Structure formats: C-alpha cells, structure tokens
Length: 600
Image (cartoon, rainbow, N blue to C red; front, side, top):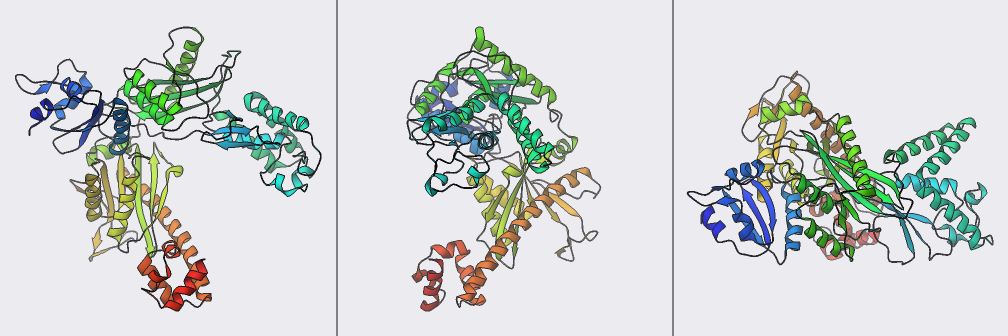
C-alpha cells in the first residue's frame, strides 16, 4: 500500500501518527482526535500527492520529506496525548520539540498531626491530611531545611523522640529537648512558627544566616562561616527580585517561553501566598523544527508528569495554545480536581507574565551558549550530523580478565561535563562487543525517562559503531553515532603516545585527522573522560569484589571456586539471590550450603 492509499484509508478515530523519511528515520509524531481528518489536512491529493499549500514553512518541509507513515489507534484524545509525549521522549523525532528537563521539584513539609512535628522534604503528596507543604523549590530546598535546624530549636532527628534521653543537640542549644524535658506544645509551636516565617520570607532567612556567618567569622570558625556562605548563595540562586506582592494568599504556577534565533528559554515562576518563592529555567536549542506552541505543551507535560503535586495552583501561560482544553482536561485527571489554565491579558496576573518574560529575555542576553562554539559546528559538518551536538553521551567499558566488568556513560552538554547525568552499569557480558551491546541496550531502554542526546560517541572501532546503529534501528530511534579508536599497527591497537593515531568512524566515513586537529582533540577529550569514569567505577567494583571474595575465603570457599561462581552467575549480587539447588549446578552441596548461610 502506497502513502496516498494509506492516508485515504485512515480510521476516523483518536490516535497517534508517525511520519518517516526515505531512510526510515522518524520525522514527526503527532496526536489526533480524528486520525483521518488530521492527517489529510497536511496533504492535497490532486494532481499528485503533495504538501497542502496552506501549511507553515516548517510543516511543509516536513511533509516534503515524508515517504511513509504509521499510526496507532487509542481510546481517547487524552490517551493520544500521553502516547505522543512518550514516543517523542523515546524517539526524538526531527520535527518535534524535545524538552529534556524531567526533574521533580522538592517541597518542604510539616505534619501537624505529630505531637512535636519536624520539617522534612518530599516530592510526593503524603497520606496525612494535616500536612502543610511549602514549595516547590528548583534549588536550595535542602539548604533551607538545614538552615531551619541551624536557627530554630526543633527536634533535630526523627530518632530523637524515641531515645527519651537528652543528646548533644540540646547541649549546644539547637533543640528544646522534648524527648526528656516537660516542654509544652505551645512553647514548641513558637519554634515551628519561627521556622515557617523563615520559609515564607527568604530575605529574612538570608539575613539571619548572614548574621550567623559573620559571628562565626569573628569567632575564627572559618569552616562553618564558609559553609553558611555557600548555603546563602544556593538559597539565593533561584530568587527573582520582584516588587510584586499580591498582599494575599494567591498561588500561581507561571510558565513563559522566549526565543532568539538559535535558543529558546523556558522560564517557570512559582508564586505562593502572594510572593515569588522560586524559579527555574531551561534552554532549548532550536532549528527549522521549532514550534513555540509545542514547546508549551512539552513544558506542561514535563513539569506535572503523571503525579498529583503537593500544592495545586492555577497555571498562568504567556501564550494561548491550541491544545489548551486538552491539556486542562489531562491535568484535571492528575490533580483529581479541575485544573485552571489562564492566559492573562491585563491586571496583576498579566504583571506576573511580564515579570517572567523580562527574566526570560535577560537569560537569553546572558546566555553565553547562544553562539555555539566552533568545534561542535565543525564536527557536525565533518561527520554530516543531523544537528549540532549540544548534548553528547560517551560510552566506555572496563574489566580485568572478565572480572568486575562495568560500563560507563558520561554526558557533555553546552561546553561542560554534566556529572549529575553520568551513569554506570554492572555488566554480565565477558567480551567487549557483548559489553557494549549490554550498555547501549540498557541506555536505549531508558530513553522514555531520560530522552536521547544529539550524539553518541563510543570508545571503539567500526564494529561497535555498526552495533550501536543496529541497536538504535531496532528501537526505531535515529541518533548520530561516532566511534573513536586507535589505528592498528602490526595488527594491534597501540595506546602509547606516538605509536598510533586515533581514527574517527562515522556511518559513511573513516577520518584520519592530525593530532593537532581541534575536532579530533574535542572527541578525544570526551572519550578520555568516559575512560576515566569507567576505570574509576571498575576499581571501586573490584575493591568491593575482592573484599567479598576474602570473606568467602574465610568460610572455606577457594578463589578458584569463587571464579567458577562468577563465571556462571555473573556477579555477587546475582549469587546472593540464587537457591542452594542452583549453586549445586556449579559446586558441591556442602559449598552451596556454606555460601547460602554466609549470605543469609
């Protein structure tokens, strides 16, 4: 069935459609209340099948590249929205917007049903009906919480109330000591209210911390002073200076988007009790596929996800979007009450939008990454990459004679390594090919939670490059891949300096660049960081395995037997979970009982 026939036979049902180019790469994922009407609106059928002339330039370009389509029928438009969002995260289509920010923002809470309640951090709604929430906080939640226990005489630890004995915290005047002393709830409540006042008034909290920091400095307690200095900086980081004060208990979640030629910025402001309490932002690289409306949709779906937030506030948007009613219905299901999304045109709410837009414009001005560095752009041209590699994932594996086999993924984004995004893997495979297959497969399987980057770089040659492309193809993902390896000298890959040069492999070409070439050095720098991460994790794993081996040795299990077990079961972690019967397939019954007893 050709493309025209497939379009004409689409069902009049809700669903998701996918467009593909001549190479089978996915171009676009879209949702529809009526698949037939929606997809047909892109095309005109006479005299030949071609893009509808009323389409925007962006959509017209996409349709001109489309040679095939797939579709999935679902029960409702809401289900189509969820499936579309999931597929975009996993497949990263060329003409869809991918927002990688998928964090869950923390809240500070206190459970008033407790006799002597404490402040804690949560990211979810808790069961108790007497819980009060404060937040969300993009940064500094833990610092605010630590500051409360620095300033207020609250019960410092959960375990304190169970000890019935005064501890060090009481002696250093950081706790009233209700575990042993007859402290009234009224007296304790004063500390709770002081803490709440500090949470709600960030300026007062910072001022109090600064006074304490100066006191520590005067007392020559420089380490404590430095710790408070750093804490103040982190608490201040998400603060947006604003004269807006609703003088009421108004709560709002505010989202706006602004863009320059190459970057868009998403700004989120959170107003609680009439004051802006925190903010966050994310940059998005843009090209011909950019669509502001779609970025608004991805922003809302990414922030609220599928879990009811602890505080539900009306949502203010900087722009009216076509999918407003659908998103409102989706969020109403999550919130378990009617969601309210507003696009203010005047009044105080409009002032909040203008404040957010002002900050978005400032962020774009300050954005040093607005102009991409020349090397990634040159790499894109050299290797014919589909986009400038802004976010890159680099992979390497490490082991010692098949022992402590591990994989590592490091992440490089906008000119620096993003260490929070690094991942390490315990591997079962014994050979390099199998190890890379295992590492890459596990990464692809996590694309829905952690979307794909712009580029993969592998520490390996042409064989591993082909492996990566096969894995991506099997999952329906199009992603650029580069491999880097030493050229063979006398049939061996020499790592010693001067012995051999690094080669770059792409899907189409093999590049022999000079050692002085900035493009090669850029890839080498990323490869070396992945190698360092893999070696570090291998050493840590090996140390742990050696320790466990010695303990088993003490129980009469020889090193040769331990190696047999690891060859069969892979890791000590697997060995802990197997039965005596399974162990007896490798060792005798006596050893099996000894091992099981050891782990139990």
